[in-house]
Length: 341
Image 1 (cartoon, rainbow, N blue to C red):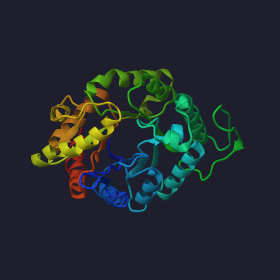
Image 2 (image 1 turned 135 degrees about the vertical axis):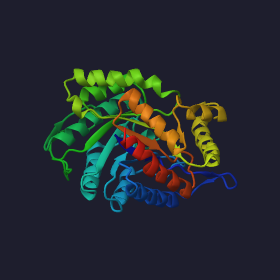
Image 3 (image 1 turned 120 degrees about the vertical axis):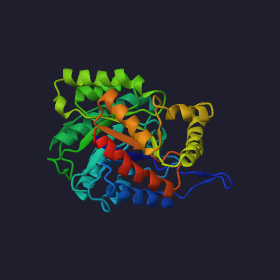
Image 4 (image 1 turned 180 degrees about the vertical axis):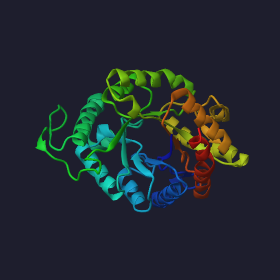
């Protein structure tokens, strides 16, 4: 089972000035953190894509390319590429280039994304939300599997016997995962296509997703795919500290980001009761001591049979030294427990 760390590049808001923290400083901290992840043996790093003032990274592939030059073993993934508002040819070109730079460590997590700011930014209509994703996924997978591509759809110009360069290392094939938030139709599509699955579980109780993941397994097998190659991951908010005061204090980071997002979505203010409930064994927050976090990840493997866990670790922009300690504990204390299962 692989252990990974995901980030969105959250930027804290300075209440005294009303300004977000400097994005350049944040990105350089992320690179220091990814280098350290590689040193402590983390298997995967996933970098998210956002186009908002409270996140530092709009171009994950650029950050991942920078990370490739300072790491040796860690896999480098987008988490996620908002494919509906991206150009599949450029997505493949960017990640095949990353794959060559990193000597075969690039992965793509494709999804619709939980934010919609990229649609008007890139000139797409939300009226085409579903069709954009379906067409672009079809094209991306075709580019990934075929040297010469002929394809036509309704929302993009056709391709006629064209090849996209450069080709990735593994006979031109990148590892492309389908990232979902819990929609059965998305899970069904991933299973039928034989794509590895990443399920974002960031609220409620993980056990509620058991039927969804079982559905994926059944449909994957029904579609005739090799079960031995099935890969399932979950992606959940995570933070590790061996100091209870730090764990309790992290509530303020977490609340600040949840309330910022929630303000535009009609959510009630985030409470300490929600935080404590999420941290319980049955909750979706993997926040606590190394033993507590390891125990919950082991529980996820038990109930879901996952092959990968990705801890989303920078919600609310914790201080750099606090992040480094969380990464250290995740690699040196949580990882040995999980690898020993």
